[in-house]
Image (cartoon, rainbow, N blue to C red; front, side, top):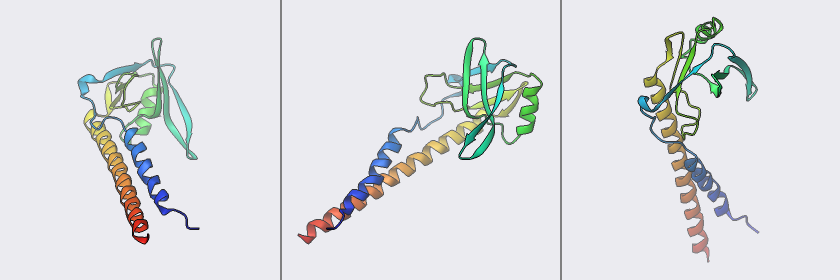
Length: 162
């Protein structure tokens, strides 16, 4: 008995649909729509997280007054990690611009500053966000297209054998 290959082609189609359905908005929000979160100088804890066996020294937990802001990923600092860590350790205020908590953009940081110095500006971060969303959408569409084409070909081959 042969395994129905059409079922295998449905897998990338379904994965593509799931990937497309879980994407956030394609365009970055306007800078005016972002909220600046000012983290108190203490407690900012620089956690060492584990991600696929690698340590991530810039995963932050910060609080602003009674509100706790948890940053799930590294805060963008445009390659100036040591300057950023020195700024935070000298009790300077860290400010991150991102959407409110209940947002489709998740925890993406669109601008970061410490001690009045901008480390990752909005223009570059918005461009990075747009590129990531567009590339994810392209991958999802390609998966759906390849899965649908493969399923269609296997379906018509089966029909012609009868």
